[in-house]
Image (cartoon, rainbow over all chains, first blue to last red):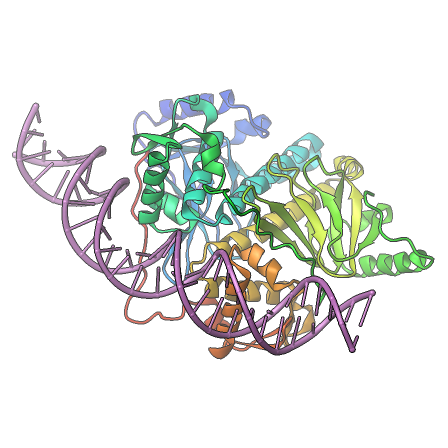
Length: 247
Length: 247
DNA sequence: CGTATCATTGAGCTTAGTCAAAAAGTGTGG
DNA sequence: CCACACTTTTTGACTAAGCTCAATGATACG
């Protein structure tokens, strides 16, 4: 496993704990947990870079991580946000070199050696199916992100973001979502500026759609106000929907 | 196959031609071409809707298609653009009901019965691997879209869009990319207004980055001017990159 | 050849980005 | 436990970019 984490005298105990955590969280590759390498990362630490073919498939056990690139104009873009239960490192994109970094202080991932998994999949169709499932889940995760990025106003984007987080982190009841990322991360995930994120949150609160329990904890008050546009008054759908002509 | 296309007396001849076309274009599921259902669609015609679990996996042989949703504010969003050589219909997203429509006048797709393919994959590991390949390709296609959507200015988005099209439609030499979609489609793909797309194209032309041979055909003159920001003058990267704190 | 759609361009207004600074947390070391 | 430095978050003022509305060319289709 690349980039081994901080070694301490209690490393073994910790690993044992994480292994147990992994076992207790049901996921498609459970059969292969025996050969999983478990590593923990500090916040900001690089988990892997994806410019070359990744050797591992990863499963995020706890914490959070981001996949990001730096564009030629110097802006960082977060292309994916990984939360507990997510797999990543699947696609060896030809495209821009992305790196995956831990976002939370204690981010723990399980790494499955790709060649090993592939090999097992060849002999066990059930595993092959589950790998497909994993890929499809990653696909639909990214599609949600496109749906969010495609929204028009910043308030809508931030609203959708909160809803997405609320769904994906549904473990902690509905008593308030605790965002694992900073405003900067939200900004780079949504393609807006930090200030705009902050202002959008303030507005949503004034509007009564959410409540900020503290800076990182949001309570959704009116779900509808988050996903819909604010003023559906007078005018209705301006639909860019003409049928098109072939080239 | 759902939504059978226009039947004509020459249907058989046409299908035979398409089947040959399918055979001549190498792709991962070639072994299964025998059981592929080939259908052609008019522009604007619905190929399939994705709200329920899709029964088929599709391969686009010729033409173009778009996967789109209508948001609650009435705006259409194009979540994916399918070109010859692309597979689609893979992920049965829980999310918003998307439909896939033909964009070009003669859009021809091959449909592989999902259950059948799954079954074959179980007995043939090579097919299972190729299915994974297909999923990964779809994944990286959508990731490119995120990269484009994340760009800041409209000119950058349109520029990246042209480059993406040039790459994916690389069949027709570098003598000019013929865009298969209308300005409206580009707008809904990039999340900007039609007028903005038009203005961006005009600007890129004035700037000497592209040449519009006709409204649907673009010739890339200076590739760099399309992917980079225009003014990298005085100031450099404003990097939103502080390390983050866990929740 | 007329009609409908698509594409381009302009003018005004709204939104979000930029620059700047203050406020609220967070962590460290005395 | 508190003072201090540092980061994160919020808010304000100004500017620039894009959306909306509207009108005019251009093209395709019947």
